[in-house]
Amino acid sequence: MQAMRIGATRPASQVMQDRAGDLDAVQLRGSGCVDVAQDLYPYCIVWTPIPGCTWCFPFIGHMGIGTSTGQVWEFMGFGATKAPRGGLSFGPVCRYVQLSPKAVRRGTWDDAIEATLQKVSGRPHGACVSNCHTFVADCLHEMQYGGVPCWNWLSYVLAIWLFIFGHFTTFPRTAQLMKQLSVDGIAGPICTVAVEDFWTVRKLKEAIERESGIGKEEQQLLSGRSPKT
Image 1 (cartoon, rainbow, N blue to C red):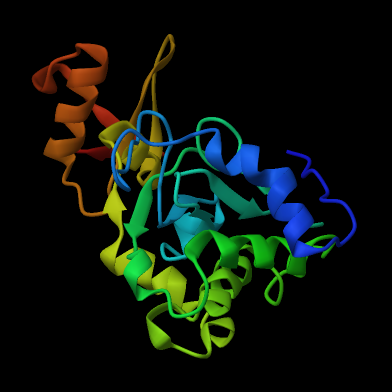
Image 2: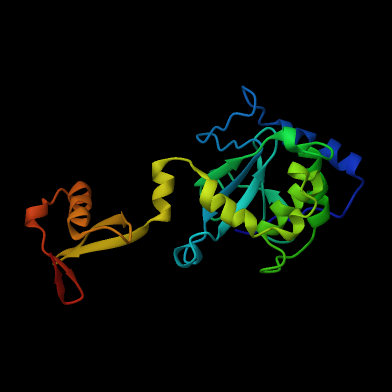
């Protein structure tokens, strides 16, 4: 997905006025309540897997940050943009951590995000040194969240934070974190199931039965040329 570039740097007051509609267009019916169905994550750091990368390093993924109204912003290069409808650019939000606006030590939550949007405007993606993690860390640094003065040095701590403490959204989205196994028969493809590394053959057969209707006792599984019983 091509990222939209934010315009040249302008006074913060003018930017706040121009973006007021964007930040307030998704006002919540409640006080900071997460609404997964509407993809609203107020005061949250959100996360989704990156296909391929996350399978090798489970704590690595793509993240963004939600405003007080729940609108998620992400960094894909050449400035930060509003996350697309349905989640983040790499897929729907699978995990999130909700923070407390009471822990903001400088300005307000939204002020910090706005200031960071200006800071990263036009900035290209720089792999390990300028990415979605550093963008979220810069937001927390701008607001001095929790009184920590060096969030800009702790960008990859956020990945571990989400991995350990992140809440899951819904099962269908969480299933993306599982490996996909294609099951084929003599006549062609039968089904695809999401599997975990620790599954036994019996558990795999039960999953295939749910997806295809073929009973466990009727299945003869082969991986390469080796039978699985």
